[in-house]
Length: 267
Ligand SMILES: Nc1ncnc2c1ncn2[C@@H]1O[C@H](COP(=O)(O)OP(=O)(O)OC[C@H]2O[C@@H]([n+]3cccc(C(=O)O)c3)[C@H](O)[C@@H]2O)[C@@H](O)[C@H]1O
Ligand SMILES: Nc1ncnc2c1ncn2[C@@H]1O[C@H](COP(=O)(O)OP(=O)(O)OP(=O)(O)O)[C@@H](O)[C@H]1O
Ligand SMILES: [Mg+2]
Image 1: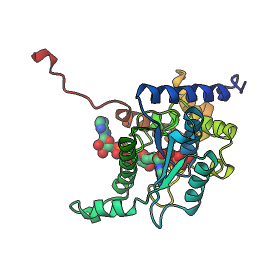
Image 2 (image 1 turned 60 degrees about the vertical axis):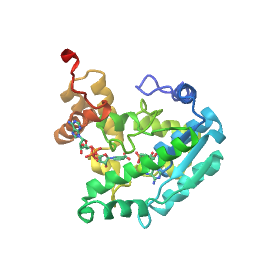
Image 3 (image 1 turned 90 degrees about the vertical axis):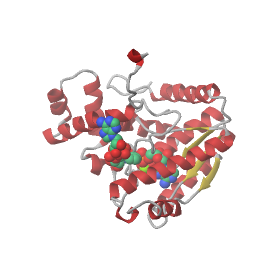
């Protein structure tokens, strides 16, 4: 039993529940397996470990989608190492030419902002994963965790585009714990989380708060604790708390299906 007393979950049990969840979702979809993007980061490494445990190595296809002269060499090595250790099917598909072709064929593509271009990369990756899912009768595993989902810290229909989210109820701090339990390589566990969408980007820098702080903040908030009390308990500044609250509010749309204009009363 893990440290349930201090608010952490029973990680071994979480592993069992998630493994069963993955099996069930693949079965329900009548699919022959799963596809997922393996970046060299911890979320996708953990998702790959759980999928391989759930389905067996032959039913998991991992795809690394690097960008030439941009994706760090250690990410390529770490992604390859995950696939090698698990014995899953793996391919590396560069996305640079796709990105260039896209921007060359869109009006004023040369003026794309870092933000628009970064999100485009995430959406190109998503479309490559779905191409393989279509071709192989598989479903796509998304790697979003609870922290990212609550904050809306993902690209809508980019890395947010998936058929299931096995890590969706694990805070990032739980992800670290479960990854260690499952034997994910240390080089991956010790790496600073990054969306890798623009140069020098790390999650904690962009969010302006550490994962440890934001996870504590979010879990207390979900328990119904007042914002001011949460802020003092976690020991963050008013600006940090405001920024987290703003993200939650501003990005809530990402967790809903698109609204539909209601015409029922016209029938
Ligand atoms: N109220 C609303 N109702 C319905 N739709 C709304 C909306 N407000 C914006 N939108 C739509 O949403 C779009 C903005 O959302 P989106 O395109 O996702 O873009 P946005 O949220 O601005 O940017 C994505 C963020 O996620 C981060 N990210 C991305 C990928 C991976 C990771 C990671 O952790 O690894 C992090 C990235 O660094 C950046 O901070 C708008 O252009 C608009 O189309
Ligand atoms: N270079 C890449 N190759 C393949 N998939 C990628 C790549 N970059 C991002 N992805 C996909 O997008 C997901 C979201 O990225 P994110 O950075 O949140 O997760 P991560 O890289 O696995 O872990 P971390 O958050 O610690 O960096 C990844 O888990 C992966 O599935
Ligand atoms: Mg990453």
